[in-house]
Length: 173
Image 1 (cartoon, rainbow, N blue to C red):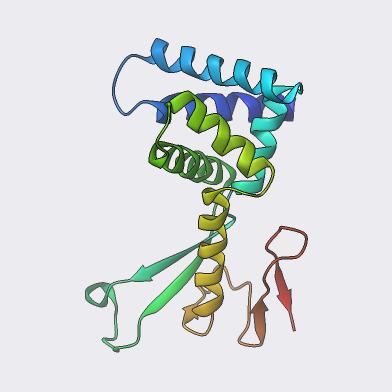
Image 2: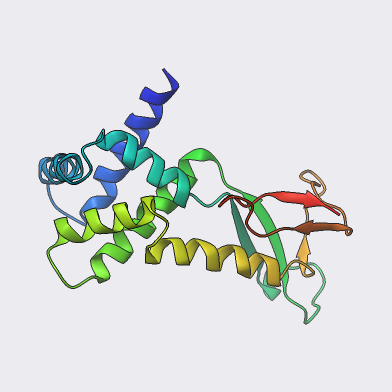
């Protein structure tokens, strides 16, 4: 049941974000063509490949910069808040990265999106580089990160570790 819900969520988000404007039926046909081409290229279930690709690419964390005008105290140092993304936002961000980098390629859009999905599935695409840059940025700014009192997950002694088997996790020293 959970796999079906995730499949439907990915399908709906993918179809909504596929075309910037236009009919939904065109986007549905394009989505179905993507699944057919994935089936031809990999000889595996295309839904499995798409779900696995989005799970690989989905960002778990996000940094939010608080502007100086919104702060109570006007210090010069930038303040950042670490936000954990829910599953729906993770899926949307992953699909957004896939579509953005597939549109940057120079060939046919269908071929581009399939190559980007397969490249991400094999950990060799530009969207993977974007995910890595996001986590490296968090690593660099870890000393400027402030945590809400409601979501006080880390103390000053905590550290954000880089990759461990292609997953980013939070570890205590």
